[in-house]
Image (cartoon, rainbow, N blue to C red; front, side):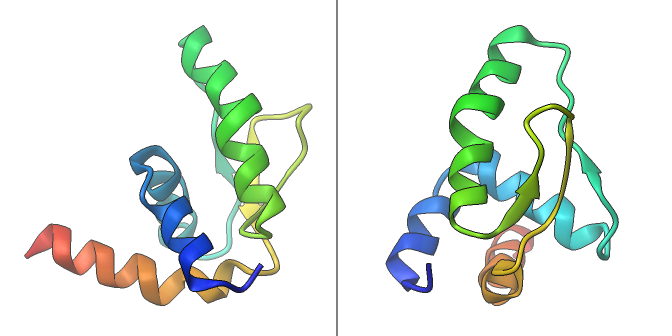
Length: 89
């Protein structure tokens, strides 16, 4: 995936954006996506994480609650930084 519109659609969702931002802030370290809320956990495992993995933005094993940067992650870093700047502004 390298289409800007596809990335913008993914980043339009706040939960996906927060997850990607946490990976950016972690400087390459794995990030836990564990949730005590069963509804949130189901949404993560069945909606958010598969979409981000399909886009190559994360690598994720459905058997655990850890994500790492995917092969296309660096393509969205400028977008994440711009969004963060707008939120802080």
